[in-house]
Each structure stands twice: as structure tokens, then as C-alpha cells.
Length: 289
Ligand code: KIV
Image (cartoon, rainbow, N blue to C red; front, side):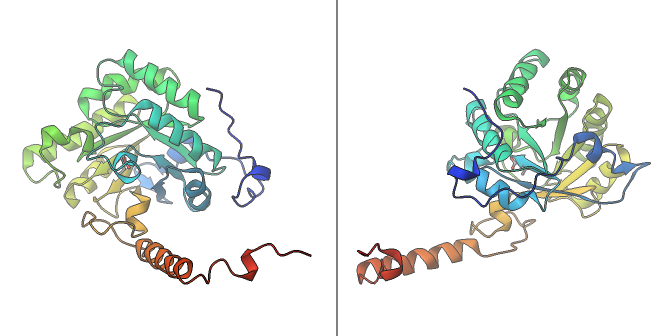
């Protein structure tokens, strides 16, 4: 499959792309945390489509093509069935729709755990197919060797500790992690191992707040919290969650809009107007000159 990274605005309904700026880079982002202090928190949201990326890009430092697309876009029961092909295609769309943020793409379950070599092949496929700049993978210390292997071969990596959704079948659910001392120690140790292996950032998901703070203080790389703490070096949310697309969301989600309500209301009005034949009106029909 050949991939072009520029959106062809002449054939697209999308707004013309603003004057391209230089895209942020991983080293520039990584450089925000120095001597344990992050001046400007990292703003990250998930994106799965070109139009969504266009709307989010100017506001974000990082756009994450998360494997949460399995549930959000495809209606799957978990992220486990998500494939490399799905991730590559959505990541390519997000790259085409953005010009400012660093685009990172999730490595789906089964594409990296077997060996560092398997991880490299999968990550290289994702970056070549999409033009994304970095990958994210789940797991702690057990993934450190793989992270070092990828980083040593030119692939920036974001780690992911705490609640790791791909491990739902082992964890037994999506509850917050780090409530016992042993679990808390493990999470901090996992984050340290990933950071030492060269990860430039670590998503810290669904942990009790003191653990998120401890991780942030323990590592020199960026921590990006979700259900974690405002004291992390940055934050991420699933965009559809914060836009209010779903009725059921985890308690750490703040809804910044009621998009589901707007869509339902618009669809209801459209249906009424089709049924009473008031749509299309004169403005939406072609009349003879
Ligand atoms: O898949 C995803 O969207 C994620 C974020 C929630 C961090 O991993």
C-alpha cells in the first residue's frame, strides 16, 4: 500500500490545512522535563480519523492513535482483537490530518510481546505505513528489553503502566491499580525499567494518585496520566470520552461537551424534516435558471 502523508485539500471536504508549521519532535517534547521538572505539561488526546486529527492538532502536543479504537470505533468488547492493519490505517489518516502534533500509534495486542524482533517488525510496519513518529506499548519491566531494542534501532517508544487494558484477561477488569504496597512498588519499578530502557514517555493509567506522583518523581522521562494525577508531566484522555459521546465512562473522565446529545438532536430534527418533507428546502435544491 502506498501512503501519502499530505491531505489533498482540493478533493477533501476538510478545511484547508493552515500554513504548515514544523511538526513537534520527540526530542523537543522529551526536553520539556529537565531535572525532574516539567515546565509545560504535555497535552495528549486520542485521534483515529483525519478530520478528528485536524480539529485536535492545534491544541495537542501528542495525538495518540490508541488501540481503544477497537471499542470506540469498531464496537469490540476490548482492545485484544485489534490488528496491526487497523492501527496502520487509522494512524495514516491521523498523520494526514495533522501537521503540528507528534503522532504516536499503539502496538496492538499480539504484535510485540513474543520478542524484541517481533516488536521491531511490527513497529517498523506501523511507522512505514502511517508516517507516525512513535509507538506505544503496554507492560513494565518485562518489556524493557524490547523498548531498548526499538529505541536503539530508531523507534521512539512510549511505555504504559498501571492499568494496561490489553491485559484485561489477566487483570480481570479495568479497576484502579496500586492499592496494595506490593502493586504500588511494582508499578514504580516498571516505570523505572521502561525509562531506563529509553522510553521517552510513560502513560500511567488508572492508579491511585500517590503512585502516579511517585512514578513521576522516580523517572526522568515524561509521565502522561489518565486516571492518575494532575502532577503527572502531561495528561491524555480518549477524545470521544471527553467529548461526551458515551453514557458510560470511567470516573476519571471529565466531559467537556455533550456531543452525543448534539448528534441525537440533529438526527431527530433531520428525521422530522424528511418525514414532513420540509427537507430539502429551496436552499438545498437546484432550480432551473
Ligand atoms: O488506547 C488508548 O486510547 C490508550 C489511552 C487511553 C492512553 O492507550
